[in-house]
Length: 162
Image 1 (spheres, rainbow, N blue to C red):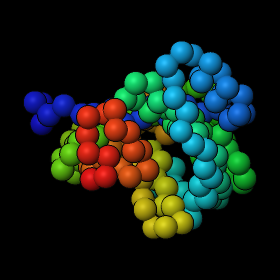
Image 2 (cartoon, rainbow, N blue to C red; image 1 turned 30 degrees about the vertical axis):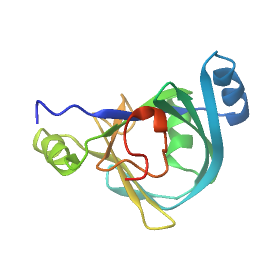
Image 3 (cartoon, one colour; image 1 turned 45 degrees about the vertical axis):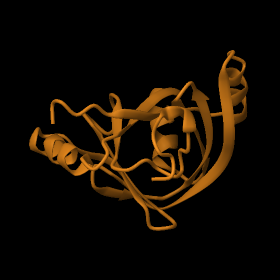
Image 4 (cartoon, helix red, strand yellow; image 1 turned 180 degrees about the horizontal axis):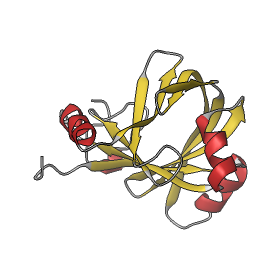
């Protein structure tokens, strides 16, 4: 695995006010805004314990070929709201693409004593795992195995429709 180089898909940033954050980032020259959408979680788990699922608003902004996933809690008590209450706004995770190799990276995390600190099941059945040193402290990593259709970015030099 040491010769495998990941592709950064996006950097997750948690905020309280999504509109203000989008205005802030898109004031920077060369930053490109693409969309805002809402996501409702079917189920959420922190450290393998189920928490009340909530919903979020997400904005996609690109700096060159790297996406910023700007996330604001919307309804309920989603993990993001609880994280902001504990730590404030700011960097939360980095999403890395390991084409065809995410399972091997997952095994490496687990073999080294790291675990899924947050898992979410979306209403459409998709599941995302976030790995970290601790659920509430430190950065997290979201692993992706294929280029996600939810992050189309032709500037990335990767087939956005894979």
